[in-house]
Length: 505
Image (cartoon, rainbow, N blue to C red; front, side, top):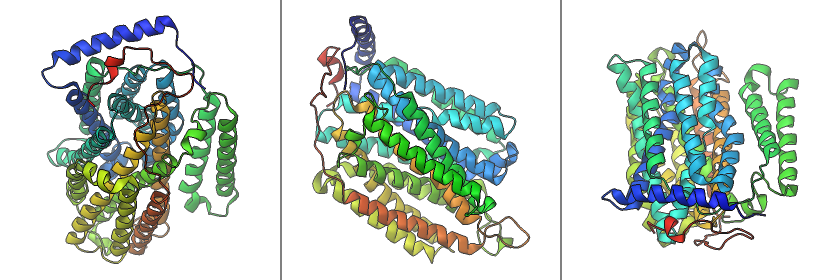
């Protein structure tokens, strides 16, 4: 399945690796801390790009003259673009080097942020959001961590650190936009701040992030990328326009059928392709695919529960419900989930070591279901939102950290880009459907004379989230706990000095 790289590539890799190692050695802190710090900044940057728009969605729609449907597309566009680009770039990382593709991905993030900041209308803003989704920086950095860490305990701690950084990013995301707007700033200022943060991560990664020390055969499955992107695009468009077109209309049914056909064609192609975009034989390991789906559903719950809460809190009192809050107020309601994940993420490593990734993920899914079933009938007071979001933060930290830990342990050298890229496409594919589903549920009926959802629509959303929690628990029960696998896939060779990728165990 994999092949040796050319000697020229080996020499280039070694030279670049030596330069990075010299810079790492010049910093008066352990290399693992430097890389972990950069990874944390990357996660915070990624979270702000994804989540800052949640409480700001109304202001974004006004600034860029977007309809509600276009606003939902600005959320889904990142997932649709990522469905094709992320696994492709991650696979290219296995072929040409994790570092090179990481830097390309981070450059895409900077470009996408600039496009959003200078956009004058919905077309350019949504395009910029799609460019952001094309970045594979997140999974590629997980692949870097996996290469630097070779023990189960190290993988657990690394996953916990990244989850904690995710919580910090969530907290910052929910407050940043609201605070700036309240101080007289604009939506564009928020977007420029995100641009500056992404540029900082790019520079630090160029200076200090080392490369992988394995290479695989340089053939790329472009057809697989096109098929999976087409399948996901058709499905999201069909669900997103179902209420407008009618769920039994020819257009809606045609798009959903097209998605199923394209997805089936993609699976058949990947199974018979010599160099697949995602090797489904690897993905079907019980250490991998249930963890993918559990993590993806957790991400969907995380983003879309916050979206629903933000909408509810900002609903004007004239609708007969809601709190009439500002963007900053909505961010404060969402703060508990970010704080719990930030502090809880780093505490999950010992829990996972004691009870295992499977039991941890099951517990998180059950807790999510219980929280949202309770919330369906109890969401009219502020304290209920604070308690609900805090408990959901605990469930998210458990499920997501455990799922990531399991598939990272299962990734062998030379498979890091593929395995983490597959995880990212599962996350983005599932999460990209979330805004369309939630928007469809919320807009199914409106308060007469307004465009505001009926209060009962929120109950349906909470129940949908609770069912997702039960599905997470069911998937988690299928996970097979894994240990760190350091064996090389067939015909893969180490092409850099062993010492350059083993620090930070």
